[in-house]
Amino acid sequence: MTSQRKIHNVNVNLNLIAFYTIVRKEVIRVLRIWIQTIVPPAITMTLYFVIFGNLIGSRVGTMGGYSYMQFIAPGIIMMSVITNSYGNVVSSFFGAKFGGHIEEMLVSPMSNSAIILGHIAGGVLRGLLVGAMVTIIALSFTKLELKYPLITFSMVFLSSVVFSLAGFINALYARKFDDIAIIPTFVITPLTYLGGVFYSISLLPDFWQYASKFNPILYMVNAFRYGILGTSDIDIRYAYLVVCAFIVILFTLSFILLKRGVGIRD
Image (cartoon, rainbow, N blue to C red; front, side):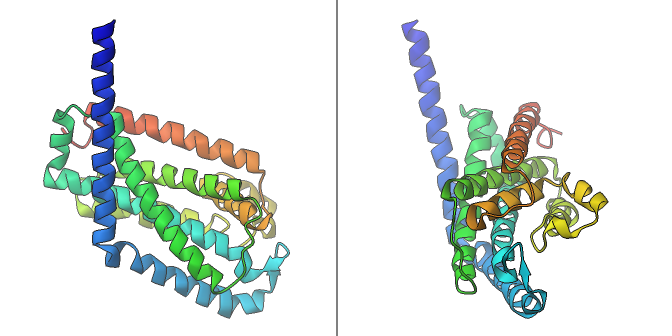
């Protein structure tokens, strides 16, 4: 029993070191190329505030009892977190595949879980960093009160985890650099624009309100908006249920695919 415990402790320590190493690599990568990872989303989101908030918002008026600028600010922040969490993991892990570094990880003593969690942590860190910067930009345009901090921070963290896992799966299947742009262009962007970022689904006809509820980003955006403004189109309990279910499913799928070597040993 003592020898088994020692072996277990050694494996745990090795995986913690591996996890720390991957996270450190991801943080250094984000900060080293900050002009590519942090500046562009900040500029893009500023344009959203200027165009949709100032120019269009002045004509829209209020929505959900708040000015249009206040209403869309949480959605724009969440949109930046989603896209950057996804983009960091898909580009980083595919880069490791393309450069042949992933084989070194697979033959090392680190577990598949450590590989996944390390990359996910990197995606979450970049997503939260960009989200914090966009929040600062938003505060220069409008006032945000942060009514429920726990809901706000937990939802932005969980949403970042979901899309980091999605980026990991995309990177596993990708065979060329063009493949990592397909999902963001044809899936994430449409779902984001249809996820209640710029409007309340209460404005939609009944059929489209029902159809919108199949969009997971709707739950993330509305729960995050509820945490800041206290208003939401959906039940917050369902939002947590949907997001946590996606985390479990995507992590399990990531683990199985990595263990089978899908996209790596093919």
